[in-house]
Image (cartoon, rainbow, N blue to C red):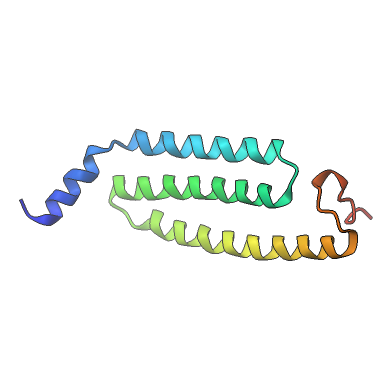
Length: 112
């Protein structure tokens, strides 16, 4: 059996539904973390977990359908996630320097 067929057979051994279940579990953990936690750094990590669960879904469907569109969306989501982290951490550092507290419940500096 050629190597390319072996890789395809190994990939076909794991059904698409397992990837989707993994993605749903990761997304649920991320949502629960965003709703429950009050530390903004942990909230950013939970948002990253949700974005990565979407990436797993994109990759799984790209592999299942044999299309590269899901891979392109994954790269786009990674770029957006990197920008989100950079901007978010910049805002958190700015708030910490002015208030010396980054608790989400107590941040009302942006209210006008």
